[in-house]
Structures are given as structure tokens and as C-alpha cells.
Image (cartoon, rainbow over all chains, first blue to last red; front, side, top):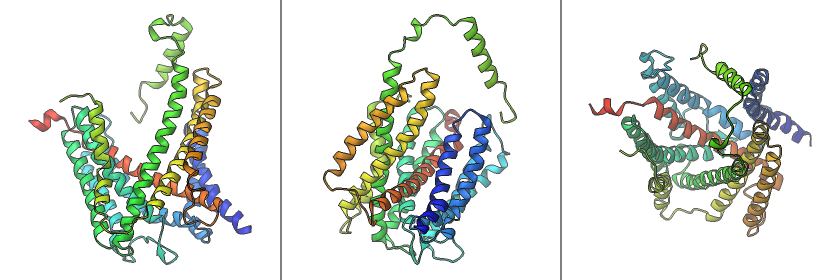
Length: 267
Length: 147
């Protein structure tokens, strides 16, 4: 009982704080958003160390995995962020000379992530937990690679259909998606440092179940709530049947427009 | 080049989305995949994502009701969500009882489902984020490309 309480306080409460922080980011109130960020930061730190504070909980393996994959995830995300905002775009934030560095960071992050599967070096973040392969690693890696190949291949096709500035983008999406699929195929054909190809193959098929279950669940929710909103929206008069705006409404609209244009430091 | 996306294009995109899974199933050969476990994982992922996404949407419906002056909107959406979830849960669990994996109790399974959902969500969001960032990081004028 005492252990349950400790797990609740050291692992589940920080996770709750993270969800609460996410919710607070949707509030318009600036102070609520700031409080949410602080709460989220504390929650993240407490959750990250929960594999040390409550190692007896089976869920603590997820915290150990989170800490192990954090360097590669950060390298990939920051690298692509730099590559994006160093490009030839109107909202450029970095010098164009930093673009190759951003792309290199992404490649290094991805290489580190893959090295964790193929190499058992003590220099790399560990994928083990209590002497065995972390069971959440056997969920995360297959899901990530499978989702990446699926999204990138489908995305490459969609992007090619919708825009004018897309040739290069579409090719790169296909290429990266194909590379990710190739890594999956290698993983189901050859043993990794801690897992056999058979184990991985099983995991990747289970990851496909997870991915499809996740998308179906979220899809059904969107459908249910979309129908509810549609039910309310269809009762409203069409735009061309609305009376013209009053002076008071025009002033209010002008205030809102003024608050949202003109550009701050960020723009 | 057409800028419109028709049903045929969506079907092709869907097939491309499923292509990696289909290749991996074809490569399965004589390896031992536990179909029942796969189905349990699908159903658990489905129910957990439905529940958590519904909570998120219900919270947002309060905001919607305030901005559109529709005070009943969150309650009606909650009723719909609950009715659908009861129907789906009854339908999915009627065959094999509670959807247990390798966990000792129902409480352990529910907590495991939440952690599992978070791990899967991070993997999926990371993959989707990479797709979006790669797309925008490589935007280049088609005209420039062709010249």
C-alpha cells in the first residue's frame, strides 16, 4: 500500500501534471499558460527520474526509456527546426549557413537512435531494464519506424498532389520513408544487439495493431465530436442570410484585428 | 498537375500508408505471430485512444459552448461519446472478456494501457512531426526546380 502511494506520487502525479500543463496551454490567459509551463517542466523532471525514485513499478521502465531516447529525439527535432528556419522562407530565424548543421543534427540523432538497436556499446544510452530489453523500447522503436515509413510514403504522395512548390519535398519524403522501411526490413531479417529478428518481427506486427488501433480510436472520436458540432452549426443561418454587423460589432472586430496584426518581435 | 484530391487519390494514399505493414506481413514467413495478442493490442489501443481523445475533446467543447453560446454542447457531446463507448466496449469485450495482456489485474492493465498509449503517442507524434518538418524544410519552387 505504501509502495502504491509512492508510485502514485512519484510517477502518476507527474504524468497528471504534464496532462494538466497541456490543457492549460489552451487557455487564453497568459498567467495560466505560464503556470502550465512551470507545472509541465516540474512534471517532466519528476517523471524522468521516476525510474530512480520508484524502480519497483513496472511503469518505471517507460521513464527509463524516455531518458534513453531523449538525446536522439532532441537532436532530430532541433536539427529539423534549425534546417526549417534557416531555409529560404519569409520567417527565417537562422543564417542559411546553419542549414547543413541542422540537417547533420537530424542525421546524427537518427543514427544514434538506430545505433541503440544495433550496438550494445556502453557509450550509448541503454535499451535494457532490469537485465532485459525494455518492453517499452520494443513498442517505441517499431511504432516509430512503422509510423514514419507509413506517414512519409503517404505524405509524399499527398504533397505531390496538392501544391506548386513540391517536387523536391515529395522526393525527399519518399526517400526518407523508403529508408525507414528498409531499416524495418533489416530489423526483421537480422538480429539486433539485444533482440532477435523474430522477436522484433513480432513487435513490429503488434506495433501495426497499435498504430491502427490508435488511429481508429482518434478517428472515431473526431467523428463523434464532429457530428455534435455539425448538429449545432447546421441550425445557424447561412452567412448570406445574416443581418449586417452593428457598429458595436464592427468596433469589437477591429479591436481583435488590431490585437492580432502588426507583428511583435517574433514576426 | 491537378491540385484537387479526389477519392481515388485518398485510396492510393491509404494504400501507401498500409504498404509497410503489408510488406512486413508478407515477410512473416513461418515466424510465430500471435494473432489473438495482436487483436487484443488493437482493441486496447483503440479503446484507450478513444477514451483519452474524448476527454480532450469534451474539455474543448466547453470552450466551443462559450464562444458559440451553446451551453448544452459539452453535455450532448458527452452523452454521444459515452453511448458510443459503451456500445463499442460491449461489442469488443463480449467475445473474450476483459482485454488482458501480460498484467496481473485489471487495474494493472488499465495503468499499463495509459503508459502504452503515451509511448505509442510519442512515437506517432514524433513520426508525424518529422514528416511535417521535412516537408517544410525542403519546400522549393517547382518552377525553380524545373528550370
